[in-house]
Length: 361
Ligand SMILES: C[S@@+](CC[C@H](N)C(=O)[O-])C[C@H]1O[C@@H](n2cnc3c(N)ncnc32)[C@H](O)[C@@H]1O
Image 1 (cartoon, rainbow, N blue to C red):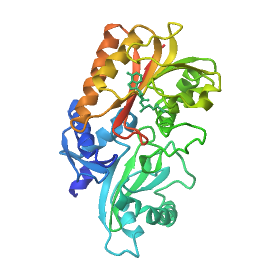
Image 2 (image 1 turned 135 degrees about the vertical axis):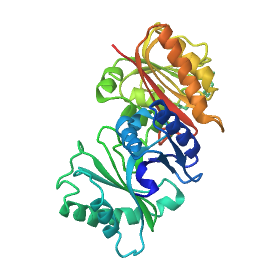
Image 3 (image 1 turned 120 degrees about the vertical axis):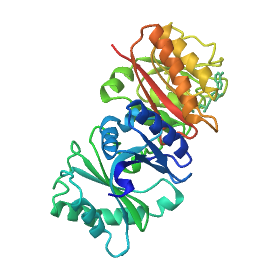
Image 4 (image 1 turned 45 degrees about the vertical axis):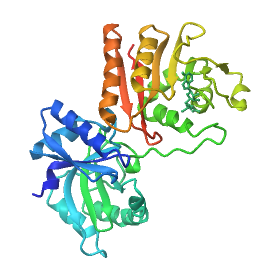
């Protein structure tokens, strides 16, 4: 058994390897599973090496990607493969699987890191996936038809000559290629920021939560709204939005009649009717200040739910997020408010994370 066989791979935004490593170290330690991250800065992924092989498996079975902040995708490593003969990349993958005891998988991911070097592998991955899928089906490592409720097989190319092969469980993995939720920019949206809230609504809320919260006629407040990318997402779901910012809102949005623009300070603003269903906030401010503001809105019942971004500092980003989240969590706990909290470094985020605090009934 080589080292890689007791590890997991976690993809992340390039530059966030330290944060991903710190997060996985803490999550593992909380479960009395011990290991350490192995990475090169800027490579867009880390390998988390456990001291005991069973610990890697336990971790991947117990920690979903959606429970984490920085990982975009995670899988348990079955083998690390150095490809010696570029004319046969399938043989080594099949050999590695023959030495494992995996049960038949329902789907295949052939991925690469989200780096400039990684992007050069996109074509190779696309071309390789077709014959690999056929070979895996012939050997019964993969079901004939895709079955997304089964385990997935992952082949992750780190270069043209090296890849990791691994598995993930259905409810624990990201459903997206490369762990990236790609979205088309809506042509009428006033800013690219719109994609951050769209990704958050699509990936951090369940379909049921989305329908219940973003329903036609429901009210929302958008703090730091201009030029209106987030408001656009809410208005396109027929919500009424109080848009708070000193900047200028896009005229198209104002013309919908669904936007009540308020040129006020987001830290002092109060909802016009005393309460809204959803508070969203994208103000560029210190994360601890935003965290307290969000907790105040929720504990005073000015908003039922909140989705907000925390802008990250250059260093100690994981620790900064944890501190802000703990501040929100302890304020909610003191007020006996039960919520689910999802915190994600989304693909469309840059140096920020998105937090969704959804109140339980
Ligand atoms: C990143 S931009 C928001 C982009 C917006 N979410 C969109 O999708 O178009 C941040 C905004 O926060 C606003 N802002 C910063 N501090 C604020 C405050 N104290 N009160 C209200 N708005 C504030 C800025 O004027 C700026 O327009």
